[in-house]
Image (cartoon, rainbow, N blue to C red; front, side, top):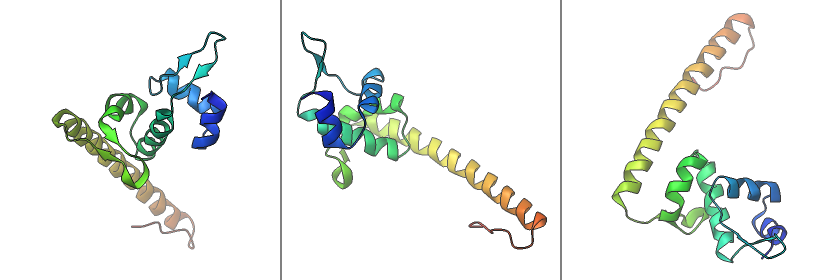
Length: 125
Protein backbone atom coordinates (compact mmCIF):
# COMPACT_ATOMS: atom_id res chain seq x y z
CA UNK A 1 0.00 0.00 0.00
CA UNK A 2 1.10 3.58 -0.53
CA UNK A 3 1.88 6.01 2.27
CA UNK A 4 -1.46 7.83 1.93
CA UNK A 5 -3.45 4.65 2.44
CA UNK A 6 -1.33 3.65 5.45
CA UNK A 7 -1.90 7.12 6.92
CA UNK A 8 -5.66 6.83 6.38
CA UNK A 9 -5.86 3.33 7.87
CA UNK A 10 -3.80 4.19 10.96
CA UNK A 11 -5.01 7.73 11.58
CA UNK A 12 -1.54 9.29 11.45
CA UNK A 13 -0.18 11.82 9.00
CA UNK A 14 2.14 10.96 6.14
CA UNK A 15 4.68 13.22 7.82
CA UNK A 16 4.51 11.05 10.94
CA UNK A 17 5.00 7.92 8.84
CA UNK A 18 8.07 9.47 7.22
CA UNK A 19 9.38 10.32 10.70
CA UNK A 20 8.85 6.71 11.83
CA UNK A 21 10.81 5.62 8.77
CA UNK A 22 13.65 8.06 9.58
CA UNK A 23 13.75 6.66 13.12
CA UNK A 24 14.03 3.09 11.81
CA UNK A 25 10.56 2.12 13.05
CA UNK A 26 9.07 1.44 9.60
CA UNK A 27 10.81 -0.12 6.63
CA UNK A 28 8.89 0.45 3.38
CA UNK A 29 10.11 -0.80 0.07
CA UNK A 30 10.72 1.73 -2.68
CA UNK A 31 9.02 1.23 -6.01
CA UNK A 32 10.79 2.04 -9.27
CA UNK A 33 9.10 5.46 -9.30
CA UNK A 34 10.44 6.21 -5.78
CA UNK A 35 7.09 5.80 -4.02
CA UNK A 36 7.03 4.03 -0.68
CA UNK A 37 5.27 0.68 -0.61
CA UNK A 38 4.17 -0.68 2.76
CA UNK A 39 3.18 -4.27 3.51
CA UNK A 40 -0.11 -5.02 5.28
CA UNK A 41 1.88 -5.67 8.48
CA UNK A 42 2.79 -1.95 8.59
CA UNK A 43 -0.70 -1.15 9.93
CA UNK A 44 -0.02 -3.22 13.05
CA UNK A 45 3.52 -1.82 13.36
CA UNK A 46 2.24 1.78 13.32
CA UNK A 47 -0.34 0.89 15.98
CA UNK A 48 2.37 -0.70 18.12
CA UNK A 49 4.65 2.32 17.75
CA UNK A 50 1.84 4.69 18.72
CA UNK A 51 0.97 2.55 21.78
CA UNK A 52 4.60 2.47 22.92
CA UNK A 53 5.06 6.21 22.35
CA UNK A 54 1.90 6.82 24.39
CA UNK A 55 3.43 4.69 27.15
CA UNK A 56 6.35 7.13 27.27
CA UNK A 57 9.02 5.13 25.46
CA UNK A 58 11.43 6.99 23.19
CA UNK A 59 11.77 6.16 19.51
CA UNK A 60 15.28 4.92 20.28
CA UNK A 61 13.92 2.34 22.71
CA UNK A 62 10.94 1.48 20.50
CA UNK A 63 13.28 0.71 17.60
CA UNK A 64 14.88 -1.98 19.78
CA UNK A 65 11.80 -3.40 21.49
CA UNK A 66 8.96 -3.15 18.95
CA UNK A 67 10.01 -6.33 17.12
CA UNK A 68 9.49 -8.12 20.46
CA UNK A 69 5.80 -7.18 20.74
CA UNK A 70 2.66 -8.82 19.42
CA UNK A 71 -0.74 -7.21 18.91
CA UNK A 72 -1.73 -3.61 19.48
CA UNK A 73 -3.96 -1.52 21.69
CA UNK A 74 -5.27 -3.45 24.70
CA UNK A 75 -3.84 -6.65 23.22
CA UNK A 76 -0.27 -5.30 22.95
CA UNK A 77 1.86 -7.95 24.66
CA UNK A 78 5.61 -8.48 24.84
CA UNK A 79 6.99 -11.80 23.79
CA UNK A 80 8.91 -13.45 26.62
CA UNK A 81 12.51 -12.31 26.35
CA UNK A 82 14.96 -11.62 29.18
CA UNK A 83 16.75 -8.78 27.35
CA UNK A 84 13.44 -7.11 26.52
CA UNK A 85 12.35 -7.41 30.15
CA UNK A 86 15.59 -5.80 31.34
CA UNK A 87 15.25 -2.95 28.82
CA UNK A 88 11.65 -2.32 29.83
CA UNK A 89 12.54 -2.41 33.54
CA UNK A 90 15.12 0.34 32.89
CA UNK A 91 12.51 2.35 31.00
CA UNK A 92 10.01 2.01 33.87
CA UNK A 93 12.64 3.23 36.31
CA UNK A 94 13.38 6.24 34.09
CA UNK A 95 9.63 6.95 33.83
CA UNK A 96 9.38 6.83 37.63
CA UNK A 97 12.25 9.32 37.90
CA UNK A 98 10.48 11.67 35.47
CA UNK A 99 7.16 11.24 37.32
CA UNK A 100 8.84 12.04 40.64
CA UNK A 101 10.44 15.16 39.17
CA UNK A 102 7.15 16.32 37.64
CA UNK A 103 5.34 15.70 40.93
CA UNK A 104 7.91 17.73 42.87
CA UNK A 105 7.72 20.54 40.31
CA UNK A 106 3.92 20.55 40.32
CA UNK A 107 3.83 20.61 44.12
CA UNK A 108 6.31 23.51 44.24
CA UNK A 109 4.24 25.52 41.74
CA UNK A 110 1.06 24.80 43.72
CA UNK A 111 2.73 25.95 46.97
CA UNK A 112 3.81 29.14 45.25
CA UNK A 113 0.30 29.72 43.87
CA UNK A 114 -1.27 29.18 47.30
CA UNK A 115 0.99 31.86 48.75
CA UNK A 116 0.52 34.20 45.81
CA UNK A 117 -3.26 33.93 45.43
CA UNK A 118 -5.79 32.82 48.03
CA UNK A 119 -8.00 30.86 45.58
CA UNK A 120 -5.22 29.13 43.62
CA UNK A 121 -5.50 25.52 42.39
CA UNK A 122 -4.33 22.94 44.86
CA UNK A 123 -3.18 20.22 42.47
CA UNK A 124 -3.14 16.66 43.72
CA UNK A 125 -1.04 17.07 46.82
